[in-house]
Length: 350
Image 1 (cartoon, rainbow, N blue to C red):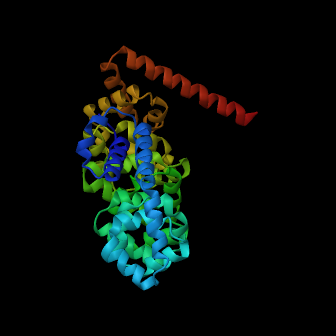
Image 2 (cartoon, helix red, strand yellow):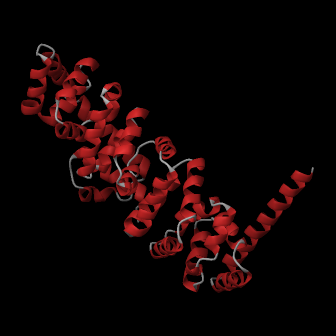
């Protein structure tokens, strides 16, 4: 079954081609890098097609007063043609025209444009206009479009947009469509802990789809912000922790949650180990199977160490019921952990 990253790429390609994502179902078995390469090639072809004609239109607008050019752009040319010629105008000229366009029309242009083609233009657009357009795109739930612009917006504009958009569910959905994970790291660094906490809480309590997206997003970011997000997730209230474990179990998302569990602070991971949701044989069996199939024993063992003795015995019994091969791999992982800890102690004493 295609994962969330695959789903996101299909949605971005569908937007580029102007079709429904369902029309691209034949790409279900194509890997994510190949779909991304196809989308980038399609974008290049679309923007290069008839480039000489777009250049002639851009040249013609230079002869018109800026107010008149703005009126013609909005009333006659339309969003698609404006998107194609924007990168061919002198930056100052394009900025002057953009300042005179309505935010709703600029949002239409954003849907049609490739942000990478107009990076310099984006750097010169006044921040208040960027915020107005971002609000309009968020109102339309144009999350794919907004995700593409995250890679290209200068930091002052990005900070202003984050401050203006108070819908943390929208921020999560936008994050799924960001092209460069490094940009996600930068965005997370801009957000205070209370907003990150609310984003995770919204994902947990909103429903199945959003929790899966949140896990995909957190696993895509760098080590430092991922540890920050893991600590925040582990510090949620008991009801949220219970809901988190329930969603992970019902959606079979243990391979996605395990890396975060391994990066939680010890005290918070110990709290998770005491959660009633883990005291269920079906949950323990699913957790052990997922750990084994994804070869994530080193990420599970820190949680096992912080279980009380009765739960450890229960987990061992469940593992034994799953077969000798799983028990053997578990024992190998335990021996490896013990050896690693022994080497670490020896290194510290030496």
